[in-house]
Length: 270
Image (cartoon, rainbow, N blue to C red; front, side, top):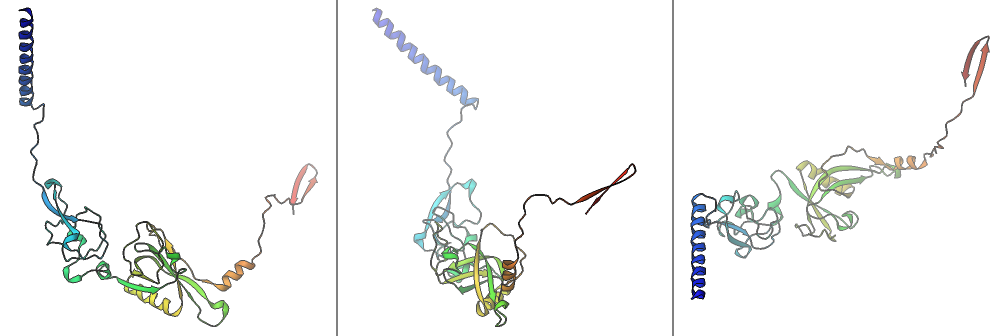
């Protein structure tokens, strides 16, 4: 009998606890202290890259994937279907899962490859290089270079001169590659394609035809132009023959003479 009473008391305690918890939860919800589960909102279909795509690639259905993008964070200029992007060329490289924005696409009539990445008003000029001129293969697409030319206006040995004619020029392609190597690995190429203005294209063509050009690789973020003057063979010889003055670091002691005229003293330094 006693055991039965204990079981009844425990059962009543459990029921009372559950009822109290239910009432407390209802109160908190009415007071907005416990957030109610959010209803999943439908996303917006956005076309993204199904794999890493190089600049100049003409998109086909296998390159595109449609995903649900949160409606509150839809990127500007997004494409919502595969048909909106297929057949367009990429004017910049994109990574897997990156939205295929219309600002990154060329028109269907433009096709693909190098021509679609040339900005309006600019020109792509290719020059033949060797391993030395191409900075041992480190002049890759996306890097910036200065162009130097060496000319000899006469047959005199000391008349040859070298000068920087173009600065911070962007490299569009190295050989047949318009995509920069991800690891920065040097490549052996015979042709470098540079992005220049029409005036720069004239200078570059004349320099490659009448002289010998050399590329100087620079930091991609270094956009400062440096004012330089031409250096001639005679200048190098004069600098080599110039005597070197060594400084000993000791002060030179100059002779002095003290003259006394009565109580007046004067010092003369020679």
